[in-house]
Image 1: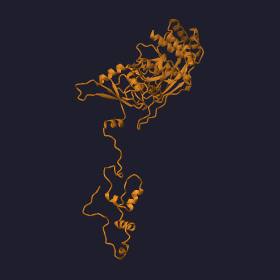
Image 2: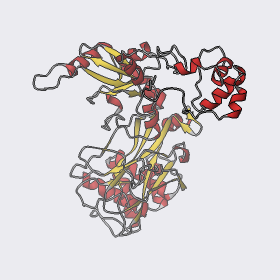
Image 3: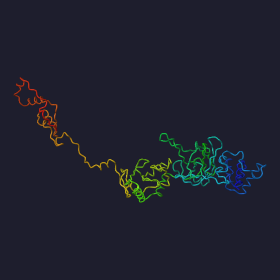
Length: 495
């Protein structure tokens, strides 16, 4: 039965436009459109509605064109088959592995390898329009073109047309094209082939470009995300044609088309708040487990310091979030984390760089209480062995608290009473310029001693004001020479 179905589909591919219209009309299908559309519609008809009546009609139409051929022919690819359909109709491994035709998997005696794509947090798959179909190289050229055809039902078209807009030009319900490696082992992530370009209904659509790298020597990375092809589709039951241009460098790729519901970071955050919040009691238990005394460990840990600053934006955390599989207690801001992955999906923990899928994110209830109870100036806390916590103040404040030395004022050595000593006795006994200077200096009580003042100048000044009887004698005979300072050289007292 499977062999007859393959032969019938090969016959359909060799039909003329009139034959295709006759076949579709006999089965109550629309016969309008180009030949490519008619061939795709007829192949789907044979694939989905396999019946003896349908096979009889196909055989009669084929024999009317090739009267010499009688009976069922051996399965082969007829000449003149459009490249657009042959590109997805055979597998390089012959009868082994997946074998697709125009986006519809052909029945074969061996089960086809099933490629599974990873689920994405921001995309909810509603329906599969084209299952994962391998891109087949047609020649030895490095640049290949592969075409796939799919149609929207009236209900699907109405869903896309009436969907709300998340932002101008972006609807909540979209038709996306995804490409991944052709591998049946494990779940495959989106992966673009080299030199990729996507054309939908003769119009090129936008494919995400490369992210520039801030690190020297690191090549820019291209985010492999679903390609939104909604703006270029026929939102009706008409056939849509997507052409993928890709570089053939030895690796195998598969393409798929899905009808999806797109979420925003705010909607994911709402889901996180309602579905994944860890209670404060459970968080305390985890802290006690981490700080429990271990006899094998020589150094006992009495506390764990945790920052209240988000490592992503270097600001105080608003909604503390962690990954359940991470061993650390340090949190990051959930809102900023989701917004970052909405623009540049990496889904890695900003603390330890491990995988942080959305399903494993949780809001820390204890950290949420701490953020509400502490002042905004507190940037760090310490968890204790009993599950409690204490704020850690600024480093300067901690040093000031640890130091018990009181602060003393600066001592002014010019004030006589400041150091418990009186000013120099030589200055208080002088009545010359130094005394006059101290009197005119103000009421502060400080005495200024002029050490450059010559004793002869002092004597002359003092004689002029005091005793005037010795002026004649001083003119007749010169005064005896004296030392510069009026004190004995044997003993000097320094204060």
